Length: 390
Image (cartoon, rainbow, N blue to C red; front, side):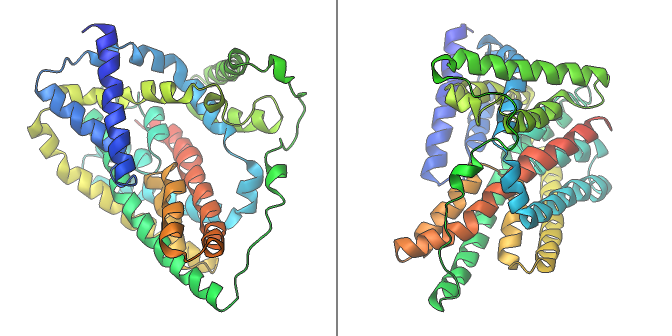
């Protein structure tokens, strides 16, 4: 297929997915919509080479490191330390998802499926990227299962988080009514944006252009690849990219969310996502139907494991079980869902601006940190470890 036509089709499908996700308030994700459209397209003559023809797969292979470094720069160590109870709750619940699906799931579904789906169910796109090469030769069904787990996890996790956050908001509303909950000061907001241990001088704005920012991202990604090479690939390069992104932001070499500042995030993530849909080119309706049973088993086991552990840990920290459950299931959808859910809940429950602000102050930071810890940290490290088990 003509390269420009292929590129256009891919982004038209993405745009359709974004519109439906917006209309349904992200309950139906862009990934789900795009997967359905591409699958139907392939069954009706859409060329299987569309992703290579568009040049997106080739671009993704060299830019995925930049994406992981970028994600690392969005993680603020100060915020993670401040919300340490949230971190521990999510750490335990995400590990529970991974161990539950792998060890219990292996009793009911193929071990390769359990291994492939485990970190992806507990993390999403980033874990998917880390696991991309693991079990690549295990066959089309295993590769397809990996993509399906990624596609359906948000459909399950998002509504649950929304319901739990709404129950928590109503509980907080009762505390507002009896004056036991008051607005907190936000004077620390500016301090949180500063690097914790700056050793690199701030670059003058005149020289801090887009190419300079991307060059720094690329240098850090190259360093990650070199460090991974020193371990003979035992430590996944993408895991190192994430860690270096966090560290180089804290020492002042990188700014927060570089790719967003350079207007490159949308195109890079668009390229990376073609790896999710590529396996659909070799599927048939019969193959997809055969995946429903193992997919349901993996999702149910992961959800039950997450629920039990999140609520137990939440009880230890004297959190409401609504909130601890909501924090645990952020592993199934991550950002921007962790922003959308509390925002929509606060709008729906609050009767005035002060109530809305109070609800957001007590739900939003925890949800954002929870999604960051589960999707960007725990599942990525777990994926790096489990990729070596393949």
